[in-house]
Every structure is written in C-alpha cells, then in structure tokens.
Length: 357
Ligand SMILES: [Zn+2]
Image (cartoon, rainbow, N blue to C red):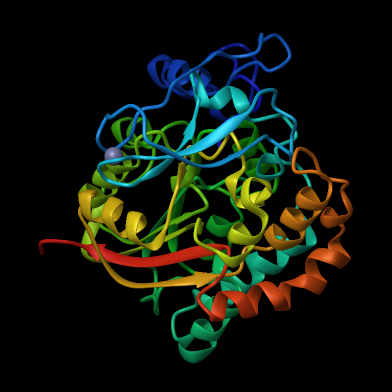
C-alpha cells in the first residue's frame, strides 16, 4: 500500500511514470511521504468510518510489535454500527509505511512466487476444479469462480504486481492500482505492465486504466488499510460489470489466534490497519458499498499465527523474530489452513456481486 519514494515531475529525468499529468503526480506524491525527512506524524482521536461517531468500547490494546512505530494503540468498537477501528487515528496514514514494507519490496519471496504461480493456474479459463482447489489451498489464488478468456480484471492495492502478472500470463486483460510508487517501479522492473501508481479515482479519472466493465475485482489485504472503505467500494460498484464479482480478503478479528493472543495478534498490524473486520462488519461494509455477499469463509493468513505467538511470548510489544523464518512459516501453514477450514482462520475471504442488478 502506501509508502516509498517520491516521483520526480515530468522532465526531471525519471523514468516510468514521470509522464503522468501534474495533477495526478501531486496526488501520488501526497500519498508517498518522504520517510527520511519526515518528523513523526501526529495522531488524533478516531471516529467511526461509517457513522462518524467518536468514542466507543475498547476491545483490544497493543503496539506496533512488527515495525516499532512509537505509541500505544487501541481497537475501539463503534457503539452504533459495531465496526472496529484503530485509535488514535493517524493524521497521514501513508506516513506509517516504512520503506522496507515487504509488500513494496524489491525481491519476490518464495511464498509470493508460489502464490503467483497458484493464481496463474487458478485463473486460466477452464481451470475448473483445479482452480477451486488452488483457491482453497492459497487464499491469494482465490478468484471466486471460473474466468472467461480475456476477462477484464482489476487488482486494487496491487503491490509489486504479482497478481496482475499472473492474470496477464493467463491471458486476461488485467490492471492494478497501487498507492506506493516504489512498489509500482518494482513491478515495472520485473516487466509487469498495467500497474498504475496512485489512487483509484485518479487512475480512473486520468484514463490510466479502463473506466469500467470489470469482470473481476480483487482486493487482497487492502480494505483494512483504507480510511473510508465504503467510498472505495462505491467506486468499485460503479466500475464493475453487472455480472462481475468482487473478491475481498481481510484479517479476521474473530479468529482463534486473535482470541488467544489479544493485542499481540499479528492481524492488528497497528497502526497501518485502520479498520478491523469481523464477518458481520465486513458483510455490512460491503452492503453499504453496494455489494451482496455470495459467500464468506475464514482462511489462513501465512505467518500470522507464528507471528502472534512470537509477539505474545516476547511480552506483546515486539517479536524475537523466529516467526519470520521461512521454515517456521511453512511448517505452521497446515495449522493455519486447518483453522481456516474450521471457521477460525486469521483471514476472511468474501465473494460478492454488485447489488441491485
Ligand atoms: Zn459506526
């Protein structure tokens, strides 16, 4: 998501996206703070992203045990709609993304490569049962059903473009939007085309991606980072095909690991996760955004279970780091997968279609 280097303006000698209009460049740059120069960003009391209400019940408290952002954070449940949010709320959410944020990184991890391969196979027209099985095994490969040849696809929060590359390799008309310019430049360097930097509205307004008729919109581990999820969903509702589908993956605030490890749960990702979803609140937010959920399940989130245990046993405010070892993450994946199959997984995957057709 957010973070990374600033773009030079047109004519400044930068490559790639320097030809973007000034209006869009300035918006991209406003999402991309210069971390080295920035003083610590301020925060303010949160209000419910749905109701605008202040206050509510504190249900969890913790710190940024992954990246050490200063300060203590809480999860507040809105007294009206019960949506859970992070408090305090950052003045500038983009400022909390370190340059080394892995989703924006330069080298593709083994697990990311495996996910990309699974998605490429699962999204091939005619993948059928194999596609469904891959989607069950690896949530990042879930396309919510079969895809016709040359489907138009949008990946919102595309990161370094792994999913867009997989869809394109499977013959689809795939596009991605990603606020971090650094991530987009990594995608470009890998030869992945179709990933546009900046905000979705600007990509649409500037004609940088097709303006509508998307058969599939994918949003994996993104909606929890977004300050106004309903506004984003309403934009997606406007551009999705009447027969299209939306696949959304978010962390599951009701997971077994969350209940066991409390404020040390990795899925909280304070303060970069602004909204924390349960089945009920995800359903409700999607409905307000104009989508009807056709299926929802819990799913594994690679590394969240060992990461949570690591933080919990280290006292809650940091991790010792053993949980980042690939061998640990891979070894614990079957446990995470089993919890997902039992309805206790650390992720939620919702498949939805535009409502009111
Ligand atoms: Zn509310």
